Length: 97
Image (tube, rainbow, N blue to C red):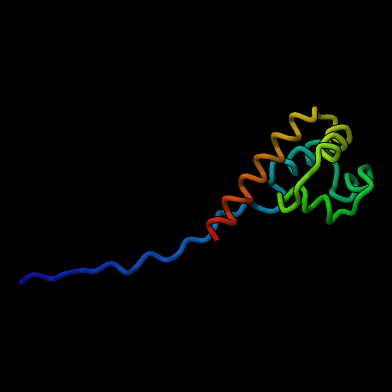
C-alpha cells in the first residue's frame, strides 16, 4: 500500500534583523565611544535623526556624510561605505517583508 505525504506549505520567512545598534554606521559611532545623543549634538540634529540615518531609513546628503566623518574621525569614504551597506540591508529587508 502506498502512502503519500504532502509537506505543509512553507511559512513566509521573516526578514533578517540585525540586533539593535549593530548597523555599520552605528558600529563606527560606538567604536569612537559616542552615544547617538552625543553624535547628534556634534551634528546639530536630534538623536532621532541620527537613529534614522544609522538604520538606513533616511537618505543622507554628502554634507551630512562629511559632518559624520569629521565628528567620528573617519574619512567620508569610510562613512559612505557604512551608509551604503546599511541602506542595502534596509532595502533587502523591505523587499522581503
